[in-house]
Image (cartoon, rainbow, N blue to C red):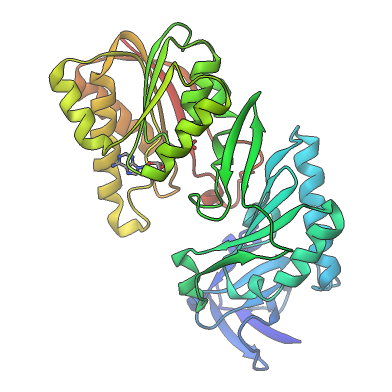
Length: 390
Ligand code: SAH
């Protein structure tokens, strides 16, 4: 077995439960592992820390899979971890769709598995987990006897690990346009070409949170993707809903979703740039009872955090200006680079500029099938806020 030793004075974060070990945290090692091999990690003074996979090409040199020395990393290990992840989701109330495995939060670093009823979409985002893809697929086969498994590894982060971007079937081919049920609505999900894994499961609990504020309301949703919040608004009694997204494909699917649920008369969608349109509509004096915003991350790196702050502030400022006095703003941010307190500061600054005061209705995070581990702060990434704009 290959052994790596942490440097002196390194270890508090790792021993506290964080599974990542960076190159500059490592001192001596014994043996010459191949990229992706399983290695053992010890503290400077030689006590066992854990076992994980190794990649010399990645800044995150080792990601720990277990803290138990006797636990073997083999096919059974992955079967057991995935089974445990499913049992946990069931225990907290998920039945049909869920993020079955949320990487680090399920002690399976860099592995994402989304379950859309009988279909599974997986991402293996590091070399060391990619090596176990067959074991992961066969565990899913064994536990669920699924109708299909698909790989959405067309993500740039894989390149940091020396991995190519790719997507395709990991089971016999199947029709990748599926329909899922959520909160009593039906949604088309395009597993092959949709954004990320095809659908944003992380907002599934939050979509229910708009239930009481949209009744008889005139609703605007910007960054609507396939119209999920818009359709919830229609279901909960909105008078009319307009959803905006820059992607023609997303808007086409949003319209199909409106048809599918019988709300095409009340839900309309337009393919536009929300930044331009919202700015214009503020000037034009348009006003809505409810404005919903779920913009993209704006930045992927800490160095560009200012870009995200500016983007969130600008769009929320416009959203508030478009909200009638006493109306509601529903706003979200999906990057862990903007922590919750910073997001609230941005919203507060936007309110000041808009000369509006806010009354908080609810302040939430990602759905509970994306667990937050308190010793891995980046597992909390989604912020979801509803405020009344006075
Ligand atoms: N609320 C959605 C997810 C939104 S993801 C859901 O729960 O399913 C963010 C969306 O913003 C993406 O669909 C993306 O196409 C869209 N987008 C990105 N930049 C945009 C812009 N400038 N104007 C409008 N939409 C934009």
